[in-house]
Length: 252
Image (cartoon, rainbow, N blue to C red; front, side, top):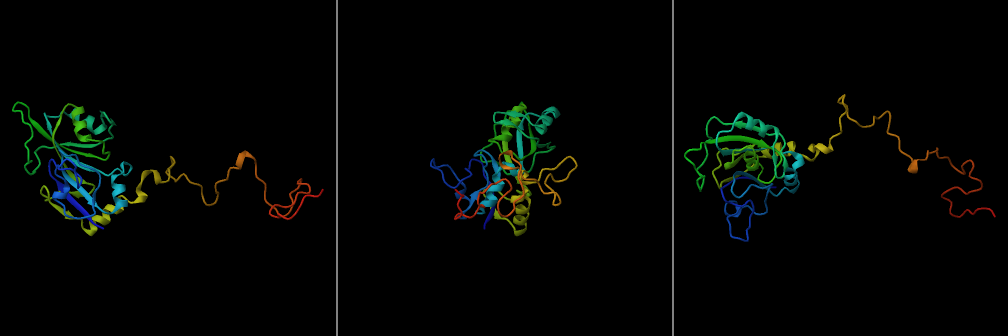
């Protein structure tokens, strides 16, 4: 199995082919048979995980697994504490209401590479940098979130996926995950980690499942009470032959 982490440059598609001739990951990652885990918008930059491990790819792409992803967002203006708190609690966007997010206003701009195309700049309006961690993955979610509170995103960089950070990867560069990183990723998002597969807990915290000493009673089919099985004819059954003897006939 191959596990590759790549820093996707600006205006590169998160796929390996494009009918319209746009730049794809094929220009940067020469590893056959691997596919992106999830997506990263054409006009966004940063980390993309690629693998041929289909079960893991499915789990990391499935919203129910709530894989955290951290973004560095350069926004127009200076967000107020009220706006930051709204982002943390969740905001209404076109796709629905966002779940709570981790949001931090950075005191200084992060150290990043120069983008291939500069952001639009207006001298009379300052910009700010936010660190935003979400686990939903709605279409263009971070951009829609900051716009919803009045601070449009000018530049967006995905800096972390789960415990995997961008570190020293330059745009277009990639590396293989270490064995320890793969092990940690699988342990954190194994098939047994899905929320809907865990036993429901009662208010006391005990698993809401039948105990070994008192097995759950089976509900009779049709609501009728069941009676113990005995060999031969049942009381009140008349001269009916026992079940399971196809050669016996009813007396005339």
